Amino acid sequence: MIAPSFFPLYKFLDNFSMATSTSPTSELATTSGETTKNEQTYPCSCHCGSITFTVTLSPPLAEQTVMECNCSICRRVGYLLVFPPKEAVVFSEDSLPRLSRYQFNTKQIDHLFCGNCGSSLGIDFREFRQKGYGISVRAFNDVDLEGLKYKKGDGKAKLPPYSDLSGVQWALDHPAGENERKEKAM
Image 1: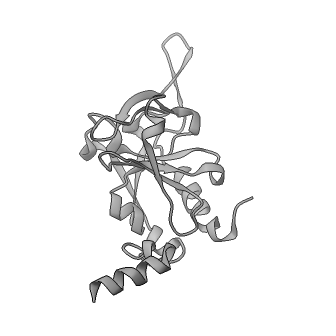
Image 2 (image 1 turned 180 degrees about the horizontal axis):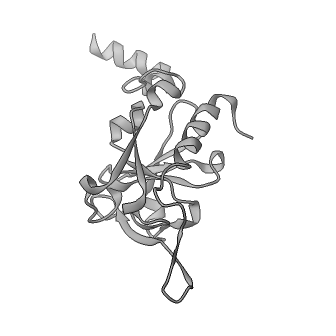
C-alpha cells in the first residue's frame, strides 16, 4: 500500500521511468535472426572504494535518458538518476555493512551513500517502487557524463512538501536539539 503523502513521488518517478530509454526494445536482432539482450553491466563505487557494486542496464547507458531532478535532495547531492530494477543492482557483500542510509520528509525511501567518504550513490525506493532503485550515474566508474542524454525532472514543483527542506530537516526531526543549538549560539 502506498502512503498517500508519498503517492506524488511514486507517480512522478513512474511517469519519468517509462520514458527513460530511447530504444523501443531491450533486444537486438543478429544477422542469423536470433535476438540478444541489449544490456551492459557497469562497475560502480563511491569515491573511496569502500562501497562497490554493479548495475546492469537494458538498454545500455548510452541509450538511456538520465533524470536530473531539481528537488531539494537531488539538487543538494547532485543525483543524475537511472532506474534499474532491484535485481540489476548487485552490491558486493563486504560493501553492504558500510552502506549508509538517509531518510527525510515522509521517511519512506532511503538515500544511499558511503559513510566513509560521503559519496551519494542513489535511492532505494523499497516497497514503494517495486521496479527498484534510482542510481546516480555519478557512481558509475569511467562514464563520460557530458555524452549522456538528460531530462529535467521538476520534483521541486511536483513533490510535497513543495518547498526546499535543505538545512531544516534536522530541526524537524530533532526539535529539542534545535533549541539546544539556539541556546549555544546565544
